[in-house]
Image (cartoon, rainbow, N blue to C red; front, side, top):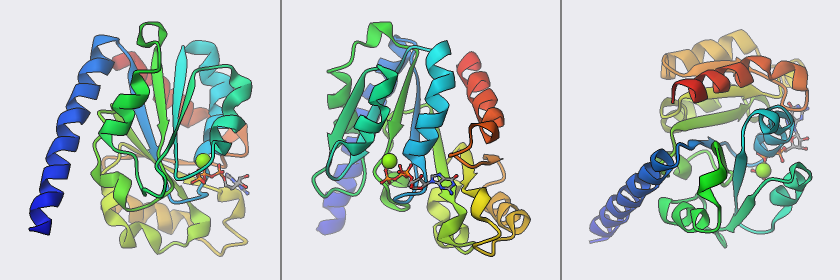
Length: 216
Ligand SMILES: Nc1nc2c(ncn2[C@@H]2O[C@H](COP(=O)(O)OP(=O)(O)OP(=O)(O)O)[C@@H](O)[C@H]2O)c(=O)[nH]1
Ligand SMILES: [Mg+2]
């Protein structure tokens, strides 16, 4: 009985995800869904990517958090449309929440929508939001064992940003070995080694995003 309920939820989510996808396509909006465990660096990545992206594209951000609008407030200096979704304890964003958020954004004047998902390395991987690109921020401070332990998330994304590499030595992380293991799990994902706090490490990631946007 419970399995049936879960199935229905996923079917409904996928249907609304498809509606979102059609909406993005209709308005020629490139969309990405950024996922990670709590504190891996999603908002920091946005803070330091938006200064570049905001000059090139008309952007809106949808922020997902259980509680508070702290992440939205951090991005407020960019003067772009930001919608904060509070899941009130829910551990992921779903397509219906995104559909609701899209109603409050003027889609006619946008090139890109960036979704920061709720910090969680498990559930967000299962919920199609209708996005074009799925991005995972993986902080090496979480431990080198995490890619294989959380393989469903690592295998289901288009790009993986290995973050906080400035802390690799202090955390006793062999970056080469970690990246090789991630490649084993997901050979197709584009892999970037970054420090989200350091803009100079973000160039390859931003160029990749430019290319994806150009061919969308
Ligand atoms: N040393 C270092 N710290 C970083 C880096 N990226 C992020 N941080 C720090 O990590 C902490 C969490 O970063 P956030 O950007 O808030 O992480 P988040 O993924 O948005 O967190 P949630 O939205 O709560 O899931 C902050 O104190 C950041 O300054 C990095 O590359 N190096
Ligand atoms: Mg955040």
